[in-house]
Length: 583
Image 1 (cartoon, rainbow, N blue to C red):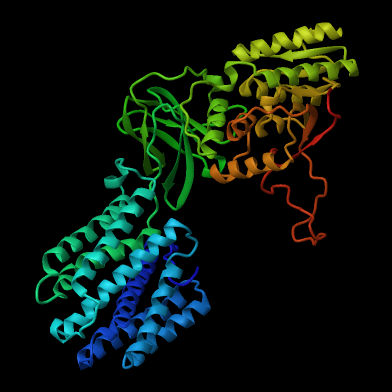
Image 2 (tube, rainbow, N blue to C red; image 1 turned 45 degrees about the vertical axis):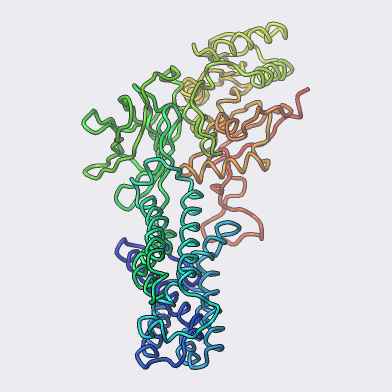
């Protein structure tokens, strides 16, 4: 962690709060010290009490910086520079010019380190807010011990300056509020992050109004002392903002909701779809663990169970109209997330196809596209999948199995796909049947649940006797971990290579966004936001580890010995092309 950057969390809640308070105290003391040193040339001889105050500020700033070095990881160079400047300013303050330059360096250090990683507008408003607050603090400290009439007569007029500084704080706070992404929805007053933004934007207004009333009087520094409390609280809120988690986007009716839940010490993602009144699916990744349940406060609580062909666990929940709290529990522990089903009925989703539909919606959410769910992959056979199935049947015809064993379902996509397979097979002279045989090829065009059942049955049949010796083939949408891993090896026609950059990038993004879950074709399409129109090849998926190694065994540089590396489409397996491009 770099020096001065406030940690968002550090171990237990108590330790995290202590670190945040340490950082806030450090930043506040440093801002008071830097501002006082910068404005030191505006007063003459320093009273003893003022020199003592500056020395205390320097000591506190240096001490807190040193303590932070033991509490968190810090940038050593920045820490040393901070310590040197904080201890040097109380000494250099005797020479106004030298003290001012040292104070400017300390103020610049604070701005740079608190703005680390921020660019453009964010860096600019950080600079404005910190600098304006530091100057306000400087006038306040100096004016406590040096009356206004004893300040040096210069063109630097303190009264109008108070309005300028207050105005800069107001503008910076307003820009921060408007650029936060919260807009003016209920998160502004319903979350700690939003309330902090309001404090940042509103309190400088108070200080500016006070300055407007008092800057014209005999004591031109009075406005600073009266507004110091508002500016101090605003500065602390500004500094603390980095440690406050930003609230999630408010739920939109009809748009699948990707949120996060926390039970005990574990945090995990949650997917709610389609987020309409009536039956909804609540999905948890396998990494979230077992024994999870979900339901509406005061309603039925359903246990999350495994669904055939889908990863993780799924709970059915009936959502009422409008906003409500979804309760997620494990044993006696529970938490809640806000959902909003709206007041209208959404797209009708068949129960067996709901997990695939939810997974497809998740791909769009990962790409930050929050679109109302109006269709599911099983609602129709896409043109790209039609072409893939035609090429698959023509490829099988060249291998001359005795027949194709076809597994279908009654979804619109399954019906259309089965009809297409039969028509293409008839043109190629291939019989199509429902029964398995020793010299047949299995072709599955059903949904996830039917595909998983068909593959597990095929695996059992092959274990008992020769069955489907010409291979097991899946429709493209069945490229999903639980389905392909239910057999030793299966094949699928694809218009993309799961090992290419875009596919691997989506696999990594899906795993990061949803607890390590594997990617799916529907999610990939929605993530891309465009159809897959590449050349068609047959890919084989298998549960293999080409180079098994013992734990701790040394291996060649660059060789990946762990098959569970990020970006895989098939967990604990591999997928490779086994045909040339099918023209």
